[in-house]
Amino acid sequence: MLQCIADSFSKDDLKLEDWARKKENCQSFSNFFKGTAPPKLLVYRQSNEAAPGSEDYLEPGDEVGLYVHIGEMSKMRSKGVFFYRTVTEGKQVNTQTANDGEVMFGEIGADPITSLDTIISSVFVPLFSSMDDTDWGECDKEQRSELVSGLSKFASELAEEHVRRT
Image (cartoon, rainbow, N blue to C red; front, side):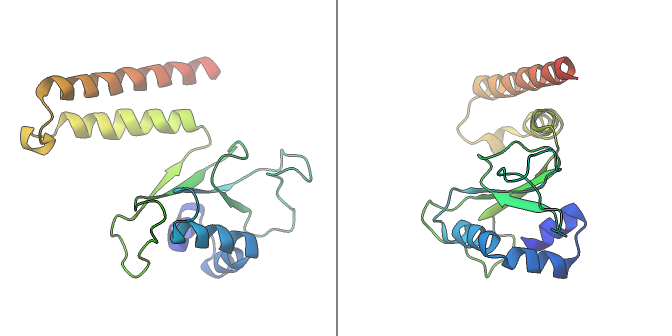
């Protein structure tokens, strides 16, 4: 997990380890792995647009400059990474096995709407469109077509919203 964060933000491994050991960060990671926290965890860099004392204010002395939380407290203003726990709620993540699918990881750009549009239109629509009949299991062709069509329409609406906002 720390290596993913270090790679995404081009952070020094040792400084990132010190950052992760800070009480509040360590507690967030621990609760995530234990299954006692929500299944998502966000880590992101935040600019100092926030007022001192507010939830997302970055203290000037923080060398790493990253925040960690469940993503419901403050607006992201720059790139972030997410971790999503796929195990049953309350079940602990197996930290002894890497890449076992119990935790998913990804990056989100400063504009989550654009990130979602990119992922849907550039990854999922082509992926679903290229799947063979056997890959879909019991899902019939009409449902598959509706899914791909609906995702394409949704991605188009996201792209239009992005254009309107810029």
